[in-house]
Length: 339
Image (cartoon, rainbow, N blue to C red; front, side):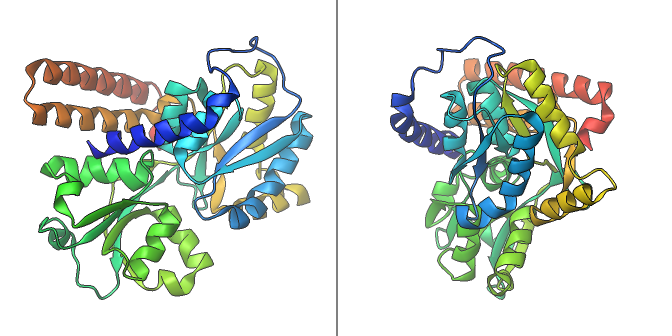
């Protein structure tokens, strides 16, 4: 399965780069407070453009919690997860799928979720083509080997997982066998690649298109959307579990109150949020990522069915049923969590 193969390759590369950082199992005592905290950020658009947007927020976070906070930028999700696993970072801004990886692999936990400028806690995966190309979703899915396609980062919710779960897997399509070439790149790179005709179609998301329209309106004007997904969980703030509980609560309160006041300080915070295309932050825990768990379990079940192995099918079905039941229970207990 393409998501698995891309992830494994990326993890292998990341592990080589981080092998000198120490074993992830060598945990400090729970509650230990570091002298400096590092906050990880995906620099999908590029660090030069992202750092000025995040730095004012991180400066205020440092002042409020009494611990210096420095940013850590990476160009792919695997590096962010591995940096948290090897304790290079203690918290960060994660898209939904890598947030789940951080929970499963890096001793992370969700303490808040992002809402967009309109107050929504969801966004959408999209497939884009060059405007005027005549490429429709039906034409894309003919799989005649004539088109070049761009996926996102292997761990990207909107760039890889959602398109696989909602477009390709239900139709039994393997992108590597469907298209002439398949490349993996950031949302920004995919936008430029489609606009310039390097690829015929590519994945992206509604937030990425918003940034593209703001930063590169000429490029954005050359693309159009031919598919969009159901709503996906927005990004979340993830911290390591072994942070001091009191410090974690300070961090939580900072995000949940950021930009919510009525004074001049709050107004400046809302300007920072506007630059990030956010409306603020809301409470959330690990159950917020249940839709991602369901998509991954559905992908695994589909792969097992394609294999024809009865034991694999039974195991994948049991795992899928377990995830669905847990997600349904969480939604029943807190219906607002899915909003």
